[in-house]
Image 1 (cartoon, rainbow, N blue to C red):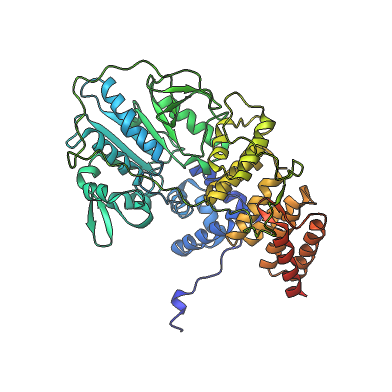
Image 2 (tube, helix red, strand yellow):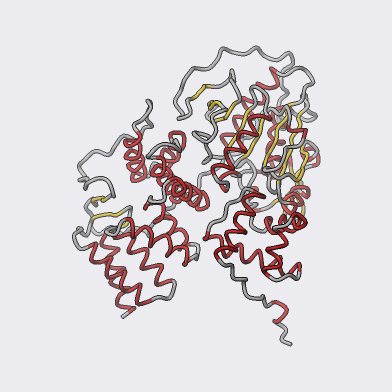
Amino acid sequence: MSDLSAFEQPPLPHLSESQFEGVRDLLATYAGVYLDRTNQRGAAMALRQRMQATGKGLESYLGHIAQPRGRSELHSFAELLLNHETMFFRNQVHMDTLRDIILPYLHRTKPTGAPIRIWSAGCSTGEEPYSLAILVAECFGLPLVRPVQIYGTDLSSAALHKAHRARYRGRALHNVDQELRQRYFVRHEDSWQVRESIRTLVTLEQLNLLEPFPPWTSGLDIIFCQNVTIYFSLETFRQLAERFFHTLPSGGMLFLGFSETLWNVFNGFQLHEVGGAFVYVKGNLPIAQRRSPTGHLLEPLAPHIAAPASPLPRPIGPPASPPPRSTTARPPQRTATVPPATPASPTAPRRVSRTTPLREPSTPPPPLTPPIAAPDPAALVQQGRAWLDAGAIELVLDLHRHVATSGATAPQLLALIARAHANRGDIDLAIVEARRALELDSLVSDAYHLLGVLYLQRGEVRASIQHLERARYLEPEMPLISFHLAEAYRAALRPSTALREYRATLHKLAPLAADTVLDGVAVSWLRATCERQISQLT
């Protein structure tokens, strides 16, 4: 037997359409994670690993996890498909607001000795609850002048095992400056371990968010649930938001991730702005500016609240130094949706979009300021496209506060938000928003086009072709769709089909001037690339 045979893997199991749908529905019901066909390879790899571990064949294994007696094995299978990547102080605006405004407010208003209670729902490997504990130590000092209880829960036992070890390195510590590391971490070989004084503030527990909440969730002050629901269907998201609402007392706060919104998902919470962070509150919050569901200011700040009987302590550290702030440097903006543009001439290029005529360079660009009144939905889509063209990514992402899932323009707005995420390099979020756009309207060509390009970049060629073919069907005259489809065919080793599509792209580009730019790509570059590929394929 070869020495390499021990490392050889059996082939991936082939899932029929009905088998994949069964696995998809089972996981959605159990963990809330909804898989589509682009996840089929990942599901097959997880199945292979668990089939090897249990010694079962495909049909036997699928039958086993579908039964109540196979629940523990279903859990092991689900863990392999969950993404546990996270980092300390992931959403800096939320963290700053919590430390500087909300924790002091709760200290002023809660009865003496009553604990502040915070839940990190979907805590993964522990970075979020330990971040919250560090903020508590920064605000209240050690030992704490006010009791604080922090709970971290996750479905994954493997992730919780890492959370209990509390050792981190690399990207997880990107937002932790050297002073905070020295104060709250201990060097341990090639990693940093959270100090015991911080770990003791956090209680970790395994919990499936789709199952009944434990008794300790009653009477919480704050729930953090960030970047967890982006993988849920809208109905599952709505049900979870409603359960959060009922477990929180009046004045309780819910923090969602940057791309998550309850607008037209669940309307029980009120949207408030606190120190630049948007927080969902059960009822009113005197320290906040109340916002409409679409994000518009409704009322000013409340009058000053009396100071506490005992002041907060100075943060631990050098007396002359203010509390250290962990700053997050934004990643460089990357255009993930299209190849890099190559200017054809020193003159300013013209731009072509799907919905607006050619705009001459002398025409002033639209103002890059958010609307201050309730916007017309169609005008908002046009404004969003202009912002995207101008590189105003943050303004496009802010459109989330204006998206009504019952509105006719919601799919187009979600597709724009997906492109903005892609341009920032947040590919997972881009895919999620594009899928949501298609969930609302299966005829949004922009969403199909974007998904096709992103899947091609990930090497998911089959899924890329599937989405790009749908985009081409909906918009047969768009040159960029044909170009990306030709690229996907070439990656799939279908040279004759790729050749046909490159020629079709040249035909669609023929009426356009060389200095025209299509969604950031110069026509001259597209023509040169098509001609080069055609020469190589013939």
